Amino acid sequence: MMIKLFVTDLDGTLLAKHHHADEKINQMIKTVNENGCTFAFATGRSANRATPDEIDQPLYHICMNGAIITDTENQLIYQSLMDKDVLKELLETFPTIDFECITINKSYRRSTKEEWMQQMSKPFKPKHLQPGEEVDEDWHKKFMMDILENNCFEQTIEEILAQDICKVNLHLHDKNYDTDALDKFLEKHKDQLVNLPCDDGMYEITCAGVDKGSAVAWLANHLGIQEEQVATYGDGGNDIPMLERFEHSYAPVNGLDYVKKKAKHILGPHYEYSVANHIVETVINKK
Image (cartoon, rainbow, N blue to C red):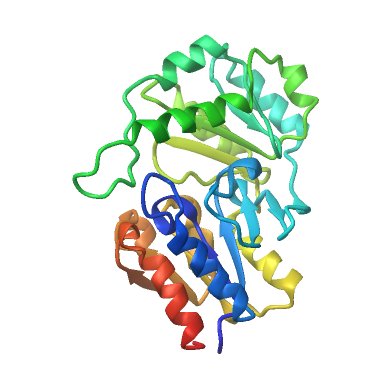
């Protein structure tokens, strides 16, 4: 059966270098569109940071692990908001943890700007660098400025609860947080909350039932596409629901080991454009 919807994670999966896209990736999306198929990103990123600057082709966006879906004109077509009572309980139970509480376009946190800057200034090395590659400092500065621009600091619980929060992130950054207590809280509230982080260095919390797999299924149904006509690609823990759910699922060889076990097929490394190449080959061969 021909694939009609291609959905891929970004960092460590599609993007080849320093979280950037380029003309090769842009051309791949164009090829998908010109052949009557549909392309979508599925990312943990916020909606306003989902599309790399280098991309100018129309596509769908599954953001914040499925809490937000926007169409090809960046119009909101699906949104899942966190329950304010359980969010209030989370913030009150862990008053010293710097949770990042995210709306469709802003992040709200209790720390000061200075505290956050100090934490983020620690040595940084993306896990998705290819062997021997060094950190692009220009990219790192832009990455920091993009995040800073959308952060609201020194927020009270009341100010956070006044927002439409879709997702809560927590970057550990070697801080001595009581993660055992947090894990117990999440287990206690598993009917309301789910944690699907991209890796072990963070928490990515959404409403229970919100994940990339259910979001891709929602989008396919919205577009009138059967699940057997969907191909998914991912490398991280938050990709597991869509790799498990769909028959045509792929992970790059650089993906986390426990993630690759969930994919039906393994491709080459992300920095060799393995995902982009596979999508083009699939479209051209009408697989």
